[in-house]
Image (cartoon, rainbow, N blue to C red):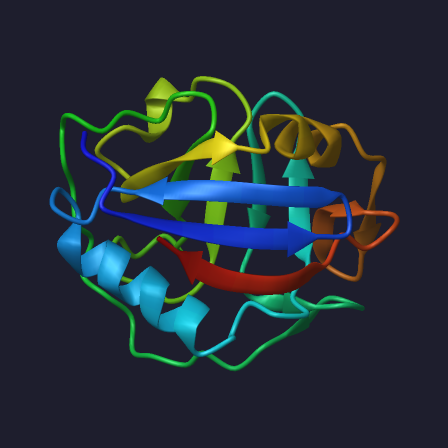
Amino acid sequence: MKITDKAVFETTKGKITIGLYGDDMPVTVKNFIKHVDAKYYNKLIFHRVIPGFVIQGGGMLKGMFEKTAMVEPIKLERNPNILHKQYTISMARTSDPNSATSQFFICTDDCPSLDNQYAAFGTVIEGMEVVDAIAAVKTTSVRHYDDVPVEPITIDNAYMVK
């Protein structure tokens, strides 16, 4: 997979740089870049941390309050050549395969059960230690949400780079 674009998340745990596969996953990458460029991810938290599986963000504010979606859901885009390996970024969704909007997850281990079920569209190219640090935090339950970091991990700034 060729990296066509790069996004940076400056978080309270450090910086994560993500390489995006725009040629291979054009609809998903365009959707993600639209959110980054609109500063939608700024001040959102990583709201779900499951060690050995994923860290998830892109939809919740501190206190586990959902941020209103910016776009209509996109159609599930699949590429059998992009697997859910450790540090892969993919779109989160509900049980409806065509329900992804802004939420994403980063695999903290190989997750073959997600292949061709979720839209993997890039990989972490710098800041793997930050992903690992997020994956290691203590979690709790908040209302009906499980796996919520005890101390909020915020995306302070998200932006595209050359």
